[in-house]
Length: 159
Image (cartoon, rainbow, N blue to C red; front, side, top):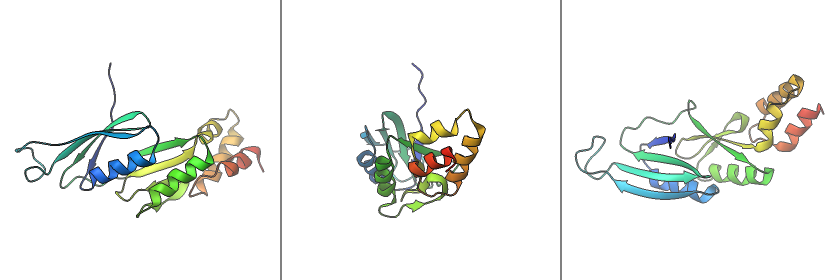
């Protein structure tokens, strides 16, 4: 079976980041971490590490090597939450220890990875068959930092 597995590159702190993600997100674990053998480009002997991990049952790989490009918004991970309480818990968790909140439900964790933490209801409302609902909901999101499901519902209803 063919799979697509996102592969994240870290300049440093990969193991700390993966342990943090596994503790914050559901159905998550670091499956393995290994040092690549001598002669692999990217750093002194024993400095290049590779890992396999799972977040919400999605498999990922990660590499830590000196000089890795910084994360940017051209790639982000979206966490779709079943409740506002889950949005709040995960959002607050990402901000602990140096994460930075951004507009429209985006944030950067302390390693610079871009995340979107949103209620599942957002996707349902944005894909409404009524274009006025979609416009109002998108307009509401544009004015938010942390996404608030109650405010989305009010926007959808035209309140």
